[in-house]
Image (cartoon, rainbow, N blue to C red; front, side):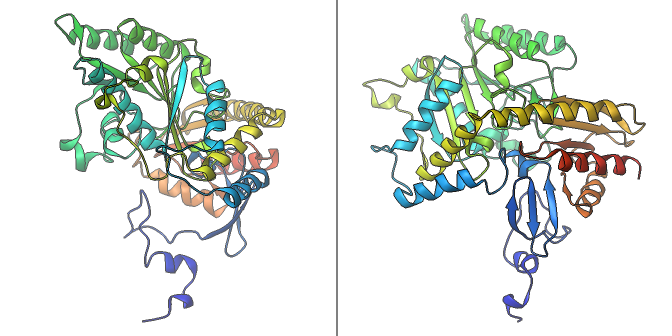
Length: 433
């Protein structure tokens, strides 16, 4: 057997690692990244790649940001972790206080976890136990068709049924899926009203909650819908005493042009799920916030009304410090100027290629640009164009990871105009190839 040290990093990787969303038998060798700076990633051979998708939508301020690194280092030297049952620490309190000032005024408490899927699991358990604590049996859940809320079991259940969930479909609880809000969303609204009216027993609704990705469905192909439709759906749920859960894991922290996607509407959801950009993209972390309406049903002398949920690394001080540092950067005018600059550049590029014969549709919301290509095949995550497009972009030094036949651009806010122009240039080159 050869010495592993005689192999390069990619060869050593495939001897011991199983990568996500990857068919390991047919996949190409992974690209060994050894350094990141701003919007750039550098491999072991010195090649650079523009990270035009923020490394799965998490990196908002750029790689290896010196300010976040400094604050993380300071925290490491002070306190790396402490059990969060019966204890607290300064950064957890600071982060909770600061986030509650950013969230809608109805949000009253934050619960810490460790990623987007667990933030969703916490939200679902909160909503279901809310009714249990009130002595009402409400177990029906509303979601939107095509949704993606994570890969743990509860998160899979409220996501759209697909190849990702096929092996587990018999084990997932039933969910009422509303049609995606196309155009004016009238079909979705009518379907929502119909589902609510049909699920009453002894004059009590059987529906516990409605979970949604506000304005943009990410993994479904960056499908976008209007704030007006979302506003009406939440309003209808509120009228029928149905808890609303905003999954802002991807859309939060400036992605849609505002701090949260739900800032575009006046109806306030009852529960929020946050992750990805929470730490500036530096490490795993999750938060679920809720209104006092939810929290108060758990606040009791009855120990059986306790929220029995937790994680070993709940409210990890280092992750809290990274999150606070990221919030500091959001206080700087330059961050929001960059968001506006990217938004404007996306708009201009969208208009430039809108009439291209290969473009089926193009949509944009804040820093998110999505281009659906005509391929002669059904729009799907498994559309054959995906691999060809990915390889084309990588060879030209741009990291774009198409969702089937949907090419999307979702860069760190620090990306320069020159770098963004190169991203647009390779997309145009691909369309003409």
